[in-house]
Length: 444
Picture 1 (cartoon, rainbow, N blue to C red):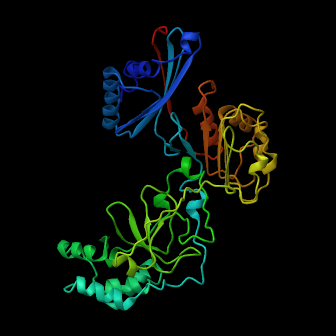
Picture 2: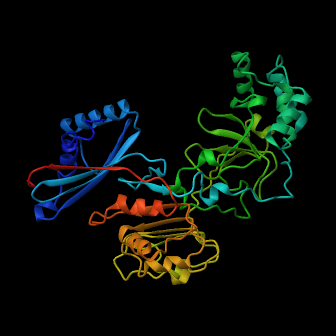
Picture 3: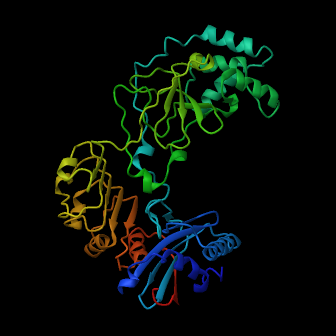
């Protein structure tokens, strides 16, 4: 890794990122940040990359691969006369790399923690029944016509699968596996025929699984700002996963599941599609497994972004203009973005029972100490100056599971040092940073 710790290795990358810089031309220091991993990079630069910079990035990537380091983050400050300080931030088990945090990431303050939506269990729907289209006789007859030589599972094998999953399978799913048990390891051709008969890449009975919410977790940086909402007219609950979402096949990328925990307007045993590019919710594909096998599928799609009022509110330019407008007993996520007006008070949302996430751009809070009035925070993102106020006052919320430092180009405070102070409050491992000095020469 010696080459990575050589300023000369980074010089072409820094020159590329500072190519269009106006600060040094105006006799001000300039700051840049980014990440380079073994397989990609994130550099704040518009336009094509010079061959020299590309070669430098590739050299850094090769060094990371040799050292078995997944990625490295960096932040540099260049003075008008060319004197430059480069900070290399090494990977840490307590830092989650995240989009929008170029030189650091999200601080994980509790091992294995997940945002509340990924811990949510399905709401009970005691009146849920199979759809009128669920026809056991038609389903079995259709499958046997398509798979005349298939070998089905025994009742004991089906009962064993139910015991392993901890649920009672729908009658339709039992019919499916009574016709074909699907053992791809023994006979790929038979498994392929079964998949064609059903309409997807079919899993074997021994490989049925419940969709795990934790597997769909996109990270705290994105996940903390999402919320779950199950309206009275939805067929599928907007969960990340459920013990009643029994995955039985795929389309090569997304998962098909039989839904045993439907939404208020859904049916027990409906077929849903769990999109691998989404982290919350699923799409209703068919009202029943019978419909699915017969090709009677639904085409409509619902918006499931999980970022609507009143659970999620965004205040700032082009959004809500006051924190008061966001205040609601159901508020879970408050994000305060860029704002040129008077900084906001958090008093209107103090004590709200469900508020768990606050993100506030640097300089947007009138009094950072008002954060203490938000008693249920699990994620907090503030500017470096605001974190400094909380740390000096000993007012960092004890309820936090994760935290982030939002950095502006003009911030002079040492971000890694502040992060390490936050981590120290929880006796978490410290982040390691290597500081390098170099000279890029005066601005052109």
